[in-house]
Image 1 (cartoon, rainbow, N blue to C red):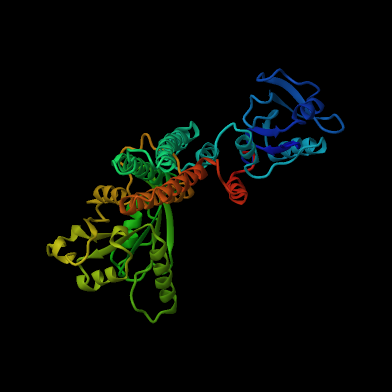
Image 2: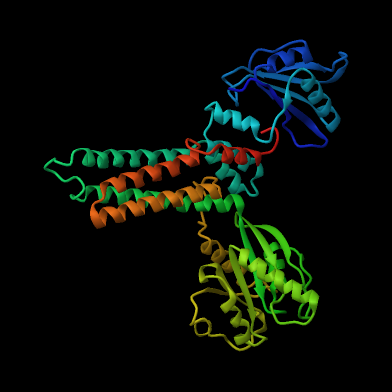
Length: 450
């Protein structure tokens, strides 16, 4: 149980119209009385003078009191709203600390809300996601997670698995019954229903993670294929230098954009080729590093250079699911390409464009979205993180393993254990089962004041 009172500035640093200092803990109300000489009724705002140790006025502003347990953290909470400014906030913080509060750790307000059962872990994480959302779609997804949409779907799946575990445990406890519960196909059918539901939730969670984290998109190709022109076309500004001289880009150039609601981190790389120039060689090395780390790769080729040499890069690329071949410079109207013949030996997506005129760019955007599994209509998605995706994958693996053992040798005990492990993985998502060190790491990523 928390016995100390925490304090933090809840608004961004710097000058602003309003700044907020927040307190939570048993001494919050007493600290407010000593600073302001009065405590308003719960959930009523009162104009007060905030005073320092010598009783001089620091500032005038609003004081709000949220009595436990009807507060965000479940504890007594005080909010002091004053004029925004670094010095005013520092003076209010200093006085609160003199009166017995301590500086809050990053995310400690949300952590206390979680520990006091005011919200589960997915909702707590959604607060940080909402603050950090990089697009309107991401903000709406975070709000749906904050309202409990993700948690409800996890709870529904948990209930289905609990019912199935009861059914399997009954078959184990009563092996002499005339009816073989495991052999009648009902358990396998219900197991497959749960696997399908889990896979659907996993797909939605993966899309929610894309909305939150975005994707890393590496643009690679031979020198002068039009990589920098493509970066400029996707970002909508002249971010990269474009010339007719091959090898203009010698370093990795990064640009963050929003691609139809998806945060995209573009990486323009040096043209990949053999070179004796040490600077260009270092650029090629960094290009290969970006290639290895990218979620998706755009291989830019053009019809001016040797097509076979350009497409030879496909041998160095990751699996085809992460590659889109972009046939650039279509505005030059040179010899027609037989794209199917050119890509007959590899299964990759391809798009024909002109980065210079914009031809085919909308199709490229659609192909990128489809390649990473993003839907055209993000409504209904919720914010998610990599740890959620990992937990769902482990749960799915346990269900698949249980299904296989049931199918092969009717191993009811093993199936029951796999069901238990699947539920344990799901419980990690909402925080019902979670190691303390992981819990600390999650809240440490929050901003102070949240």
